[in-house]
View 1 (tube, rainbow, N blue to C red):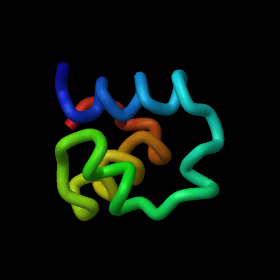
View 2 (view 1 turned 180 degrees about the horizontal axis):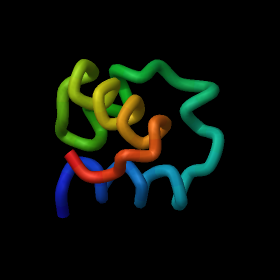
View 3 (view 1 turned 60 degrees about the horizontal axis):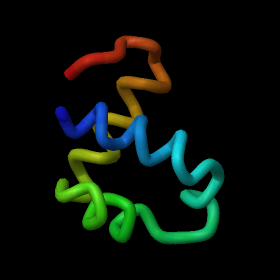
Length: 51
């Protein structure tokens, strides 16, 4: 799975958990850096999808 796919699966499995834990912990769980997770979230928010 790509990092984006892992993030989307994480969101589906644990909805709203990101509101309660720091982004760096989510990124660590996904095996990516917090900066890269930020880029993924920005692209998804803009509706561009795949990196």
